[in-house]
Image 1 (cartoon, one colour):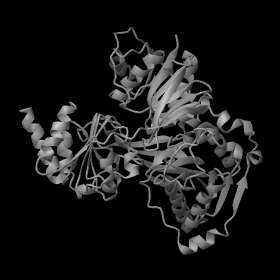
Image 2 (image 1 turned 90 degrees about the vertical axis):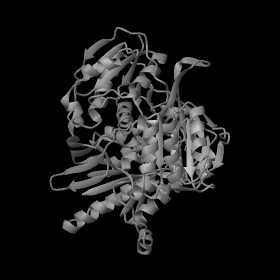
Image 3 (image 1 turned 90 degrees about the horizontal axis):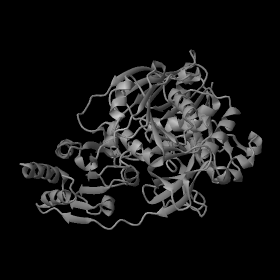
Image 4 (image 1 turned 120 degrees about the vertical axis):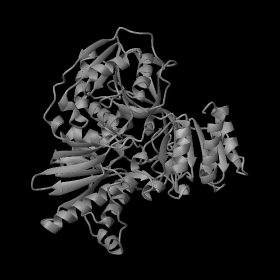
Length: 323
Length: 265
């Protein structure tokens, strides 16, 4: 078998959608071996059945959980050897990329981050994997290959639609990695949960509604519209810097990069730093008072108008059509 | 105590960024600058140095970059902000290096510096991979404490403590020194160089190193040695203009019509 290791996006209680997306990609290129790190990893394994993993490796080790990425990288390096993996897929989150970075040095392999698709090079060399990226704020698409070691590819959320697989008999294996002292050097000493908004997670939401300077600090219309669509709420850097919305919700180069089915920019002019964080969205809609705002150059649909009237009216319109 | 800040000289995102014929980022024909996200690391180094200096001996702040001759401008900006000295690794053979090779050069340069604290930005603003700090830490056998939104250094206990604002929780992370710490754009507000700073920077020492100085073979870096590279770079076709309506009272209904037509509502 040609094992493809998939680092499962698991927060300790829920398997996130990105994991199913990675498993869908992994099935195209080999036999997915899902690696779940976290407490109660065995129960997470149940959620992974039906998505094509041939093997599910659980790492339920407190030493891994209480430290930063180094132990995960060590565990993956050991699993690459054990399963003779031909590729490793990890979520292209900040910590996922750090795991990939440390792993690359450990196993002498090249790494590609922020991939939006992975495919075999069917024309030249089917053994060669090609990772597709969108770069320079979405103005270029690149095709990247790894030419040393095995490809380590970090894949962005919402890059592929997760496809359930026919029920496979996945083997569940509990794995205890051998960890170095170095891996234990940086320790998480406290963890305070953020207040849950009840909305989908920004990074993986299918719909994102963001507010910017044009909200003048009032995010209520943005939140209501997001709730009507079942989406997450984002904010531009200007809105975050003004203290109107938390940094955790910032979309852009220095915030979260999103790639949803629908992105709604309300009162956001569309500076390049913002576009870098949302340019791969499938459909873009903008509402802005300024008809000259650069955001209108990249929309599928735009309304030149005041978000404070357009968004509440649209929210009402959606409610009306549903009844 | 010695603080080394790793910085990168990048093409200005406001300009026209593009690829050169060899599919590497074109750095020669575009305006460049100190990566905006690295300014936060420089600022934090100065904040830490000032705080420790007020209580005892002020650590030296050294700024390190790897890049073509123009990258000296990134060091210059950091020196103008208040860093004490610069190290510039420049060698034509480095051109086209991937993150893995870049991390090898950075790590070798850091090994000459005996730093107690290594600071970096959270990511570059050009390649934007965000993996080099982790790779450098791995190569040097150092703990990495990344994405700090707040940093406290205790030189007596030889520890650092950071606050990290995660997606679902706020974490406190502690590590022994020496360590590599990356900082986010939330940690501080970088200062603008003062006139005095600009004048003082002219007299600050900058050491230029080649690969030979670091004992790295030219064959081990550069585009030909890259473990990952682009095989194609295509300018994305300009998106067909969408329809933009001026709200005359029916804007919201038209918006919902559009969403319905795309089955998004």
